[in-house]
Amino acid sequence: MNTLLSTKAAAEKVATELNNSLQLFDQYEVNVAEKTTVAGNDTAKETINSEKKIVRSFVSAMKKDIERIRSVADEFQKTDDNLQWDFINKAGK
Image: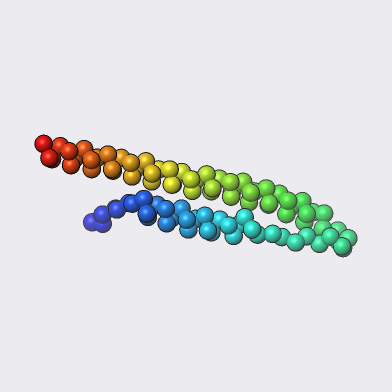
């Protein structure tokens, strides 16, 4: 049976990797044809703007989740530290 070992460093690594991947979404741009009058251009612009809103929403949600990963890792680390401190103090008595 596998043992699950979670550390703050592991959580930070995951959060950093997610954040690095997210930057690709954040930086992605679509160039819209501005100089032509093809009938589909207006529809394409509307679709692209709609997609940009969806991507911005996704990026915002992921940034919140990344911060939650870090926050939960911090809380677990604090709990682990407190438990270790209590154990050491009780074992020494």
